[in-house]
Amino acid sequence: MTGPYYCNLDNIKLAIQNKEIGEWICPRCSTSYFPNLGEKLKRANKFETPNGPTQPIVAMVNDNSNTEASSVYNQPKIPRSFENILKGPGVKLLD
Image (cartoon, rainbow, N blue to C red):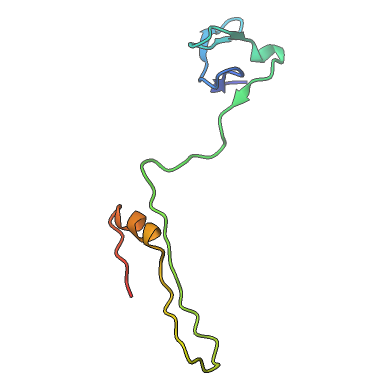
């Protein structure tokens, strides 16, 4: 088995200490591991996450499917706190 492996104690990526005997060592806690002898180790995820900050896509849809007549029409409003959070990263709110 080849790396990358992660320390079972503190989740730090292990470094190969000795290729001949298959010893891996944690640079933080100095714990030695021997995965080629059947020792269980944490492995890296099989997927990659995107680099950099991601922007969530938010949409609000005004559902006018209710055709009943209403004496009062309430326009849906975004809570002020949510609106301020959205404006921070440069989101434009449309009517």
